[in-house]
Image 1 (cartoon, rainbow over the protein chains, first blue to last red):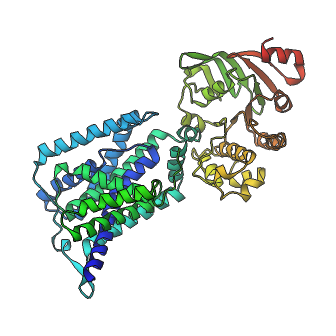
Image 2 (image 1 turned 135 degrees about the horizontal axis):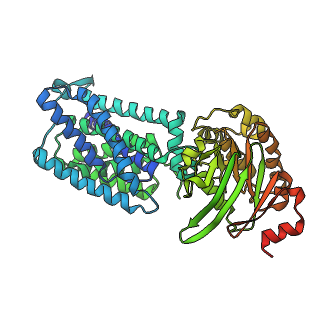
Image 3 (image 1 turned 180 degrees about the vertical axis):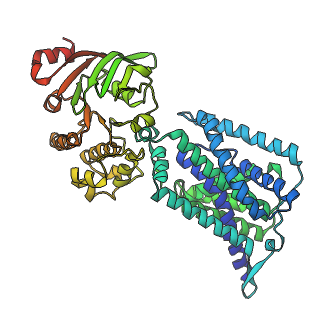
Length: 290
Length: 232
């Protein structure tokens, strides 16, 4: 029994990491109606950038976040202003193709620079530290930190979207880009800011991933898939839904893994399929069908 | 110097030319109406003024400054706001949020939420409702209020009576004197000639992308107007 409770708890906490991956994706889709195929690869790029800074300097990975997150945010803004804004329009294909191209370029650049070896970020004892909950039950400190950060990020975004002029501008531009311009909103700038925030969050996700697990340059697409599944399970347009989606995915994977070491990933995909079959709009969808 | 002055404004929809050299003026404090049948180019003209369609820089002067072809979001900041055809409220925003988005450009001026709720009391009562949950007339009030929140010197209104019941149209136009009293000039596009004649200080009639008639309502005869309107 304790083992199963443990499995559930691990799964729920894994959901924190998944929701960090999912939030950036949900943001770029929510504001720009754009799917960033290279989303997972940008996370891996941020993780390798962190590794490249941490290893020679011997820094703590958490300290590197202070550099990587703003850098990726700035990179996201410039990428949107310089490239991705030009792909937006009535046709949804150009952004898909361009970001698919970025995905391939990033994977190969990382392969050339860092080789195909698995790498990770070492946080020392924190990586294995745990808090005993009584009985045989214990939770890792690191997964708890990641969950805490995920909740803080989501709460921050919720506040940004519901209570600030910038958040209103995001929602207005998402609803009707032309009418938003008539309100004095510069869509190109707003889209840049949205992508900047999405990239900053995905940088956090990438660094946490490299702290939790081993990564290789080819890991991006799988991360995109989990993020996508978490967003769809939670429902488009619902920020807290992405956390629930991440948790459901995490629990399904943990339970599958417990049943058989080969079933973890499959169980996650099956949970996604089950939600799609029952609630095609996701569990907490708020966006309207257009 | 006129508040707004256009000189040979042209506009295209793809290969189709919608406007053929429009010359017109709006003076400070004036209410001007543009009338004309469907497809006469009235909406294209307003969209061009608001920066949603391309124009030569010098073809539109606003407050003495050439603004033709500037992006829409920069034109709002100069004090020219538009109430778009079909209202175009933001569905995921409440009434109050829709109004607040209007103040995004942060132009200083007389308009704020309290003033608007005094002008349209029903909006104050329903400020937490989704904008699109309101009746058509109330939605039009939100659309007008949203544009006023940018404290414009000139308010462009595109077909604000379209699809509304006559009694509702009366309510909406009743707000016009209050808007003018704050020093805002108004340019309305109307298909309803009677309504336009009532509110306008001056009137332009468009026909097939050209100005077919201009003058003060009192000085224009019914024959002149119907000939300019229908081209017969």
